[in-house]
Amino acid sequence: MSKKIDLEIKVPTSWSAVPLRKYLTLMADMETYKDTEEAVEAAMFYHLCDVPPNYLTKLDISIYTNIRKELYNLINISDAPLQRIITINGKRYGFEPNLAEMEYGAYLDLMKYKEVNIDENWAEIMSILYRPVKNTIGKLYEIETYSGKIDKELFMDVTMDVHFGAMFFFLNTLMDLLKDIQSSMKEELQKKVPNLDTTLIKNGVGIHRFINLPKVIS
Image 1 (cartoon, rainbow, N blue to C red):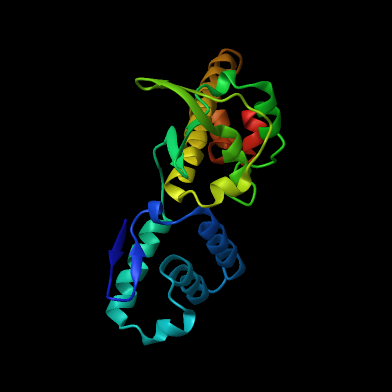
Image 2 (spheres, helix red, strand yellow):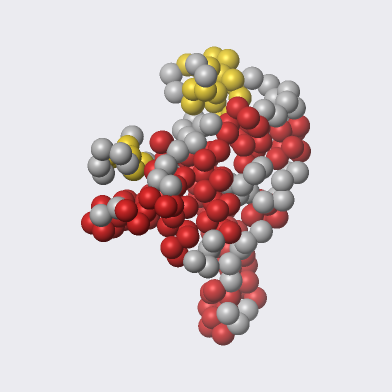
């Protein structure tokens, strides 16, 4: 879905208009120019709207401002639904139905990746998680057995709404897991440490962040 700002420029209003290939290029440029706001915005206009940097100064200020607002709204995504069945080149692929019971080979290959981020390895991770659908019964479905074959290119042109859905599924699952672990640990510690809440606050536990996702997941 796209929104026309004028006759020449189309601005994506959802990630369903942006493939992973383009997103990775955008992120690389934004990282390169992260210290210069104008350069970051030029990268956004170029990769998301196909507007060359030398054309930006020719835009009417109101048009530039409106596009800029739309792009920042797009970039600041905070959640996306998991799409369990997707279609690629006319073929249906299903997300791993039960992560807790996935095949050991798939689990081992996933654990090879040090981080769970949408980066140059993400298409390979998606190739492990999404496999051809064999059967469906209502909302239930069965996917092909994991063969060990990873097709990175297959997912490079899949749009970012699908990729973000899978990413946020992992993040939300992780957060739920951490809450359960913290709650369980706190209950045990509460029995052993008096005034536990006060002790934790004094020691800065309230601002601790888990940043090593694979380690926590393992």
